[in-house]
Length: 246
Image 1 (cartoon, helix red, strand yellow):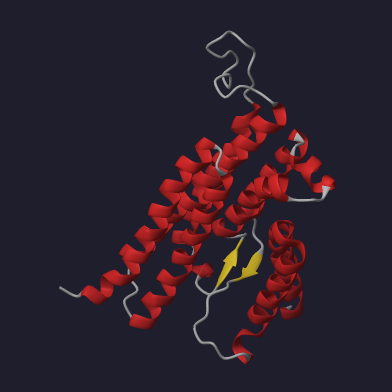
Image 2: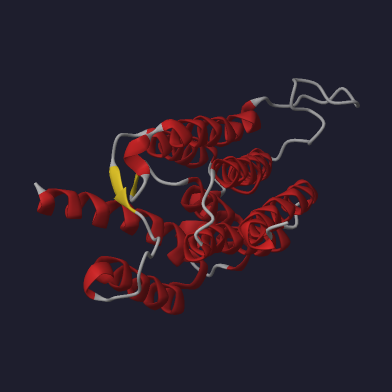
């Protein structure tokens, strides 16, 4: 039995485990726990491919496992988190999504809009597996980036000190707009650079290193507010880099 070839798959399954537990935390409304688990899952997702390349054991099984794990951690979880944000913004009972809850109170179907993120993530991941253009870069924002954007929102609302951002996150129309924009960006024909390192030579990865330094700076200065800004910066830098190549 070749144990070496299973090491990346174990990392991928670690991602899946984190995502599965994160679903439970998200349903309970523990967004700190949800965020921690999603971040750990994304770290597993980053290293499974890197380890597979280092060990020379890339294969179709790992590719399929990776997408299935991502679907949970970076697809289902952010959809549930967005749904919960809608519940808070609308101040509706969790039992009233289909119009009337068990006590006869009026509910709302609007929170289900958040699950568009899950559908968009599923379509993106399926398309990614058959799109040969995305071996060294991405087309559309990757699902982990979308997940990081979404899980940061309740943290900003809970721990942030900027009333402007807090009021935005508690506004249903802002949440609808963010849901639609992120769903679109995941599947848009926009080439984006990938944060995957085949080597660690600076010259070959200058853009990635500069981006990572900017990320650290923004996180130190803005904390949770920096996360959605970093995702937007990622898209803007990628578009600018695309124009440079033309």
